[in-house]
Image (cartoon, rainbow, N blue to C red; front, side):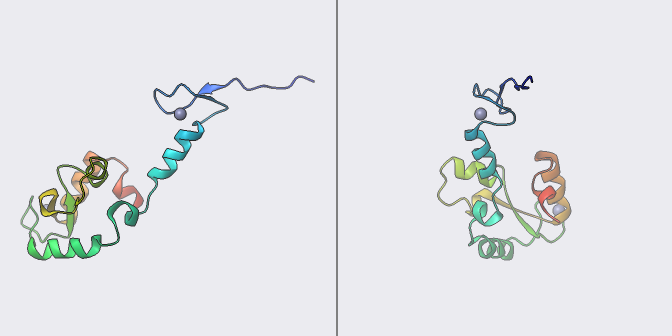
Length: 120
Ligand SMILES: [Zn+2]
Ligand SMILES: [Zn+2]
């Protein structure tokens, strides 16, 4: 009886030389897991208060005349700010006020399937 031995293939993470049975190597599987963070892990539990305070002081959307509902990290996203080692990524200088329509427009354009996909 011939045993079907699946040839090892490179990890699906681009540029990774590790050969695995399929999918990602252990290290990259771990990294992918880490990327599925909840908003509290990404933004920090103090974020709702900071956002509220920011929107109280900046009530208008920067892109249209509507009321702002979202404090958007701009031009650099929160993950990138953290990656750069910014200690206070929720500072006003990293934020801009947006209304929902403008926010969904910019986020779907810049991060397809990102924020909006995980949101109901
Ligand atoms: Zn890998
Ligand atoms: Zn707007």
